[in-house]
Length: 75
Image (cartoon, rainbow, N blue to C red; front, side, top):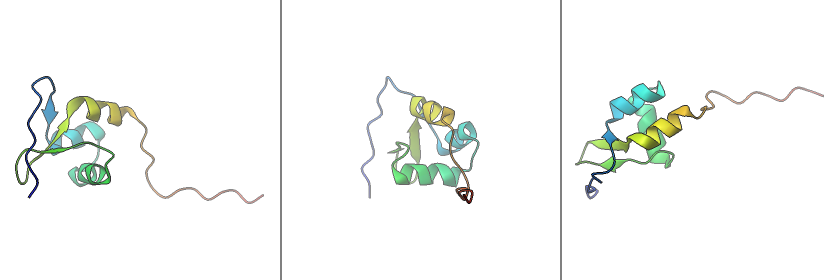
């Protein structure tokens, strides 16, 4: 069991669903980003994850490469 974090009163935290809405993707994709370490998350309790609003906004602005990489043109 992971230890719950102590929220910083100066920061705003959002749910997985809210983060997914900001990214324009699924909640599962947000969890994958957190698991990979690309997006910070805190465990509010056993099942609830929360994300820092400022970090989510910053990451959502970055262009995420999706899909399979293109093949190089034959020279």
